[in-house]
Length: 113
Length: 109
Image 1: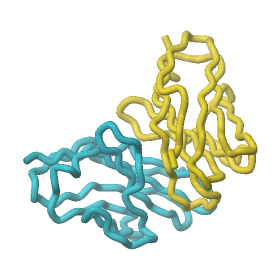
Image 2: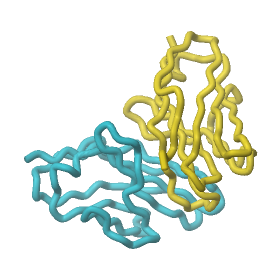
Image 3: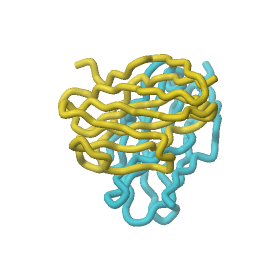
């Protein structure tokens, strides 16, 4: 079992561009959560997907959107990139219960110039 | 608003010394509390959760509802305990895991 896999590992984009990050959950997991981790900060919750729908959302603007596919994999899309979007984006998978532990991927490092 | 606070950015101890990493939470209802750890060049992973009441790698954490705290403790620190530690909380009505800002533990030989 490869666990949670994310792609790409690194990405450099220019202000105003759009980006798509991808995540494959751990085998057997049906829930995917996305987090943004700025340097020196803890992971900040962006949103969570379950049964192909956004189930919970954190305090992020609509420029951040996502999708979950029938095989439970997920994408995070960010439009109109800002310099402040530069961060490590973490994907975590879990079972559907609210207190099910999260299993994290290694993250995608996004740099916006 | 739900909040998890870790007041210390850095905690440095010598090998064999006791360790306590502080975590306070502000949550309505009955939250579930977790500690996650990130060792150098590894992914973030679960260390322990309060409902399991178990000791992992010698670490324990007690939920104190009166003080709204969930401090992580180990009686004798080891060099391999050096890592970034994050306290996190969720609840049935919020259904999202909120993290603190993390504490870096450095254990010197």
